[in-house]
Amino acid sequence: MKSKKKIIMPITILIIILPIYLYLNDYYKPTSDVNIYLKSNNLVKVEKIDKDYYFDGPGTNDIFIFYPGGKVKKESYAPLLNKLSENGIDCLLIDMPFNLAIININAANRVINNYQYQNWYIGGHSLGGATASMYLSKNDKLSGLILLAAYPNKKINNNIKVLSIYGTNDGVLDLEKYNENKKYWNDLTQEIIIEGANHAQFGNYGNQKKDNKATITREEQQQKTIDAIINFIK
Image (tube, rainbow, N blue to C red):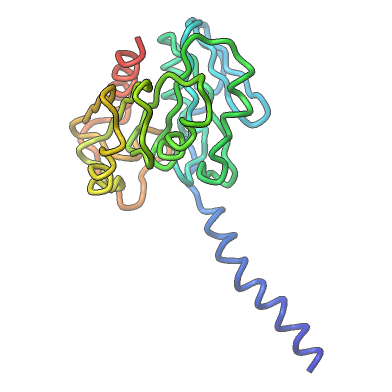
């Protein structure tokens, strides 16, 4: 009996742990074209600080802390953030444990006191955006929240600017929940709906399960997103 128990226990543990392990290691990886955006160029200095990326462009006043989407490798957002930095908005791309921002809501704490900027913004894509909204009340440096295909889960203070962007072809965003959670918006909230945009094209990681096909290119979707963020901040 004792020998059987010794065998049963490891099998039971394996049955419990294996699905969790497989779930956490099944994530969207960046496409090969992101590599160029992880390198410095004439306008943007890209620096890897521990596991985070700092995109330092010509701007000196504004910075955007970005939480990646759920189960999406952070490097997938390098093109979007590199181009934002080119346009005067420096960016910090935050690494998340197991590519799930919800595991570390306070991840911004490790960077927010290390830089000197006049205006601080936080946000992210999908689950990353929702998680960033939870962090808002934890730091009084923040000037605004930027949500890409995401919605807040708690009331946003009236002194915080909010930008919400999503696409008409988004098959992942729960629109019913999105509209319900507009009750947490404030009077400073701006909403941008991009015609033909889907969920996955905010990043560079290919197609996403349950998403709809976009009728505009990824480059078009990201450029419209960049334009909206620049107008919002500037």
